[in-house]
Image (cartoon, rainbow, N blue to C red):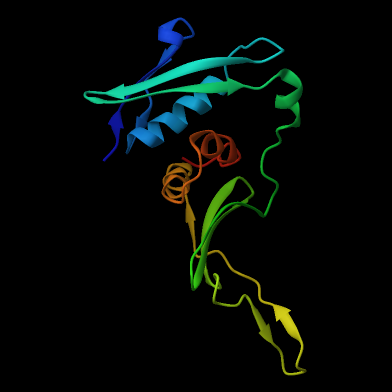
Length: 163
């Protein structure tokens, strides 16, 4: 169930917002995404983001990239895998296509195989079809569960248009 969190930059001097999220970590990723869109110096800067709801609180440093770094930071390309979790027998992925996020869960993993031998004895990579469409919030939750950093979650999910 989504809850309202409070977030501020540098003790409120850099602004504040109220993200709606299912967890503190997800609220932190939303706060990073919000902070990155701010009006910052061209040379970049370091800020402190604080996110809280009741007794839950997280405070952390975040680097705002320079204008040159921001211009180099492109959104995910169509069909790009933005996250993956490699299990022993399966691989889970999040792929972006036309601004939509899709969850893929395929056989593979460390002991599985994405490739199969065809009738001619040639190994061919098998296409992995998306399992289901997901929204940006679910993509963020999965990435957090898979151990991605808050900054990577915020940056990599920007290309997803559906909330």
